[in-house]
Length: 67
Image (cartoon, rainbow, N blue to C red; front, side, top):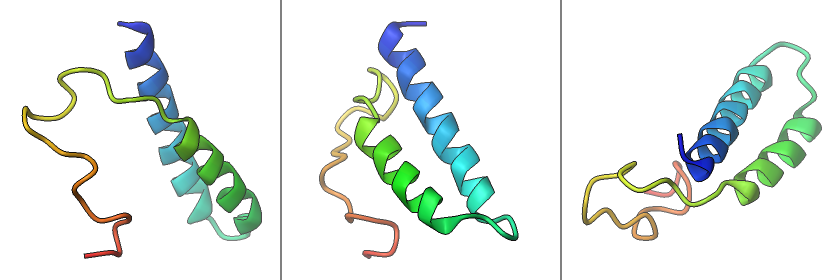
């Protein structure tokens, strides 16, 4: 696996684990907010071939709730 692929996969995995933690009773949501923003900013460019040709990742909504 290429170095960028590994970094991308690891960061996505951490974001997923953080989302699971956020849904737990008693989760520290201040921690979740701080760490999720840091992880999202550190997310490297997706590896080539991750999305179909012609995909414009900047053309979608800013977040899932912005439709």
